Length: 291
Image (cartoon, rainbow, N blue to C red):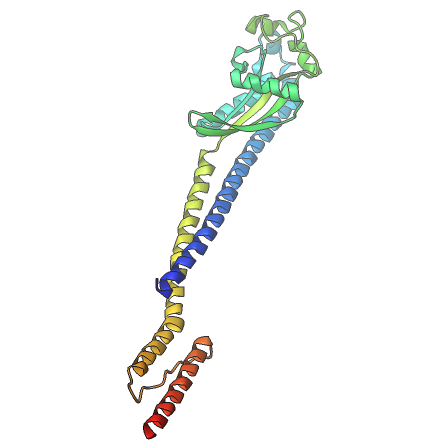
C-alpha cells in the first residue's frame, strides 16, 4: 500500500470516528432543544389558561351571578373551567393538534369526563402528590408532549359540587343530579392537561442535523483533498525526486543533477544527506578509477 493510501486510510478512520461523535452529540442536542421548545409552548398555554380562569373568576363571574338571568338559567360563562376550555377551542381552529382540557373524574357536564389515559394520569397525580407531570404519548398525528397540573377542589367549588341539595337549581335543571357531586375540599378531582405536537420541532431538528451531517461530510472530503495535496507536494514529490536520483546513481550514471528541495524541513535534510552521499560516492569512484 502506497504512502498516500495509508495516509488517507488513517484520515478516514480519524475523521469518521470524530464525525460520528460530533453527529451524535449534535443530534442529541438538537432533539433536546426541540423538546425544550415544545415544553415552553406547553407551559405558555397553561399560563394563558390560568390567566383566563383568574380573569373570569375575579371579574366576569361576580357580574354574571348578579344578573336576573343567572337566577333562571345556568350560565356556563360564569365558570372559569368553561371559559378556559372555550378559549382554547378557538385556538384549535388554527392549531388543531394543540389541545387544552380541564377534565375531571366526576364532572357535572359529561363532556368534561376524563378519558381512560386522562383518568390514569389523575390517579397518578393523586397517588404521588406531584404538582406537575409531563410525558410523551402517541397520537393519530404523531408524538405529542403533555403537561398536566392537578385540580384541587376549592371551598368555593363545593357550592356547586358538594351535594345536589345545596347546588344551584339552575345546574340541577341543566345537568341533573347524577353527576358532578360529592367533591371533598382539598381533594384532587381532575387535571389541567395541555398537549403540544412534537412533530414540527422534531422534524426541524432532524433537518438541521442532516444539514450538519452534510456539512461535516463535505468538510471531511475537502480536508482530505487538501491534506492529500499537501502530502504529495511536500512529502511524496521530494521523496520521489530522491528515489529517482538514487536509482540513476545506482545504474552508474554520471553527472547526475543533485536533488534540489527548497525547504528547511526533514525532507530537505534527507535530500541534503543524499546529495552529500552522492558527492562522496563520486569521489570514491574517481579515486578507484585513478588507481
